[in-house]
Image 1 (spheres, rainbow over the protein chains, first blue to last red):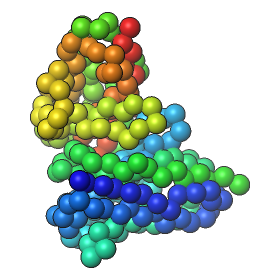
Image 2: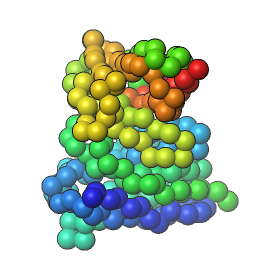
Image 3: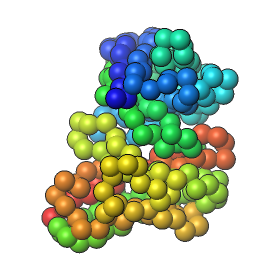
Image 4: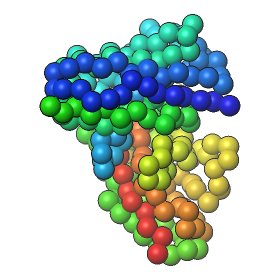
Length: 118
Length: 110
């Protein structure tokens, strides 16, 4: 069955960096676009970024552009999010999700919590 | 990219039908049939309920239906059940090739 497992979250100081990973299994990872979506505590969902199946097409939300970098390793069935220059407002649960096309996310991970605080 | 507009809360009694609206612009909802709806229970990951405006993934109850008119999409839940109580989010593809979510709607089953 399809599984997405995020890791790498934790407590980081403002201005710091963190790299999130998402391990995929149960499907042909290289066939699918993948995305990162976050949810601040008690708030709604916010789309962050997506990457095409080959990695050649990438888009970011304005709120993270220039600070976050999405990437993937199809040989390792893994998705990544490099987060730099972190701010308090980046505090959230970060989910990776498999895109069925056009933004319909049919599978989600359990999420990993990132807390940015001094 | 501004968030899509959803009512903060809706409520209904068991067996009734409710509709949640999701209003965007001609740059997102109005231009693409790429509207999705998600259900999220507390502490859980979101679950896809509707994709491409009105399509249900396998396993989702046919009590859930979606539609769109102009810049507004809608999710209708018929025959409300206690387990439908959750937060609901819409999303849409945009003309910037990005995605935008709605602010979320809390559904209370009375």
